Image: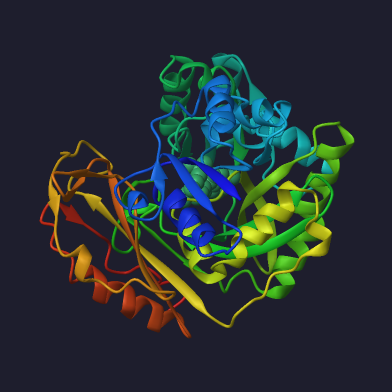
Length: 420
Ligand code: AMP
Ligand code: GLY
């Protein structure tokens, strides 16, 4: 089969790595890809936000199956364009991608599905929003409605902070994403993520993970896209997972189908767990990054069969072969991230590292220059390992980190602390 993956981060490197191991994969193209992906697949220069261009490329290259990595092309309707052209695609329609692209829409679906989530109100006008904040008090959570690259959520501890967030959002800081604002009850608890394949009707959980959003050790400093992750997440015990599937995921999928906009792809449920009960924080309509890296490391080649069955509407026929294993990934980022950082620093020592079913350095922001790997983004490498215990996975990952010679980068040293 000829397979095209859209995206060029650590998530797509991990997807490509898993897909490539499956004997059904004949030719693998990733657009745009990165320096690590180029070591195992063809990279193509393609505007992945342009549905027409993606369809033409897929037709010219006899692509049988397209896997869409990031949310932006999904929200822009790239999966719709591909399916309209008769090309098998993994990833939701633009309508179904609203579960990530509009926080207000997600709340509306939760109401209809009776899925437990934070209490909320929606506003399109600042004065009413400010009055609501004053009446509710703090802590309170202020969210720009639309896609804001992970920066559109402010957990406000004081009324002043919440009002400042409203000023920014209604003042246009988030563009159209902030034209509407959702204000939510602050939920206490422990966060974890549940990843569920959905083919429109059937659902199949493919793993749990916990991310580390803050830049510094001990969960300090500003928020990032994620500085490391591990799987499974112990807080998502079998009982909590069953409750989340029964009360949150299945009713959501049923409500989407009832509206005539079935969800097909991976539904990433961000959950807050307190006293053994999960409530929904938010949905994403794609794999997490870096959570995908630990999921792919655990699933290996079967990941492709599951994703393919999902796209073909055959989820009811497949199951996950779970191993009693753990995976952990450490993100190496450019000095300065998540603030301003330099690009172009050289990374040495990667070629001496093990690469097997338990060790892999997935590349995020890298490019190849004159035979060397250089940093080209904020989050640059995802050093990933698997073990029979989480501490074994962690020790293997940090042993690799310590062999990477990259003065231009840093990482957290405490990934996995909550479960260890
Ligand atoms: P994201 O939307 O992924 O940028 O993340 C927003 C983060 O804000 C979540 O991962 C939570 O840590 C936090 N958050 C969002 N909504 C709530 C809420 N209602 N209560 C408590 N924390 C929240
Ligand atoms: N790691 C968080 C995300 O992918 O949204």
